[in-house]
Length: 116
Image (cartoon, rainbow, N blue to C red):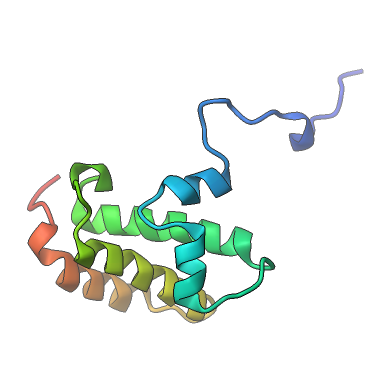
């Protein structure tokens, strides 16, 4: 009889960062995101970490290039990530993603690649 499959038995891949490490190496840290959101407890750390990852990916998609191409990261891009984290956090039930993307395209226009 085969053993049952459990995700708890899987070990994380050594080259992939943990959620906390990902947030720490991202364009903004977990602490910075929580400060921006005015969160002073650890209850929502996992949620905020996921939102930072989603916001970073969304901004990269709007830019049509990875954040690593910018050294240093321009303040507009940094602000766009924080804005996206806040928007996703505040409007998690009723978010208007079309409006959010239009705003990001406007603020990130000077840095956006014309084509992929």
